[in-house]
Image 1 (tube, helix red, strand yellow):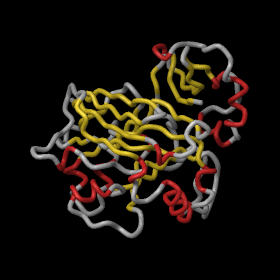
Image 2 (image 1 turned 180 degrees about the vertical axis):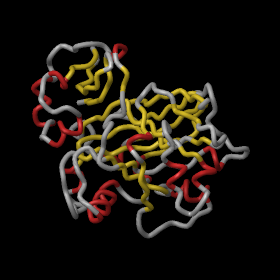
Image 3 (image 1 turned 90 degrees about the vertical axis):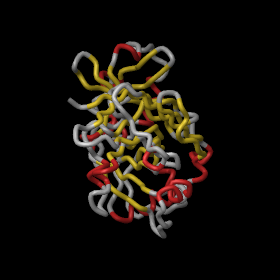
Image 4 (image 1 turned 90 degrees about the horizontal axis):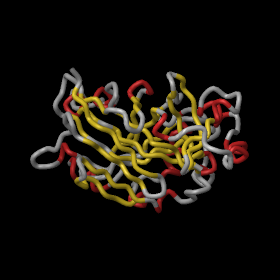
Length: 280
């Protein structure tokens, strides 16, 4: 099943994505957001609506970030050997984690914003893991039981601001730089995320291409490690890291610029596509 959040006629809602369009769950259930729906064991109820007729087509809505209001977005750095090699860094024993703010996110089709302050706006195609139920100190063995689904993510990075200090969060959460979508695919359709394939394209040119089996820290360990720090809640997002091929490490560097289109495609999920617009 595919679930997404959207805006239609100025009203935020969420629903099931089908070939015919969107089944609006927001008008059928009491939970106001997809995050609340997940917290109320919504996946167990969603199937009852899946055969209903679509309320409108995808072209009638603006897609929002899959989870517009997560309690936390935990991003992972340096989680592919190819990316570590191109950065010249050493592999870390523990996962490299940083935070992104919900207000920095956009949905599929919306514009990635190249900020006024920088010309070093980079792409990072990644797999996003959406948590489906609360857990603390989750074991690796049981970790995937806590996942609601998976989505595409573009962790757009403002590289010079990322390098201002060794704490690189400023370059990772500029407004309008994190694309999340177009929907989440539930785990019944993706029992083993390590078998997925990720590709990032800039203006049709393949710039990143990897199998998810090449993650250094597995999704299971990321969940176990993160949930040791504080409880994971329904709707929380873990963005699992980008592979090699980022623009900053090319010669010459390849930055996203006004008028570009960046796509992140993951097998079994779909394609997240966003134009790039320079802030004025």
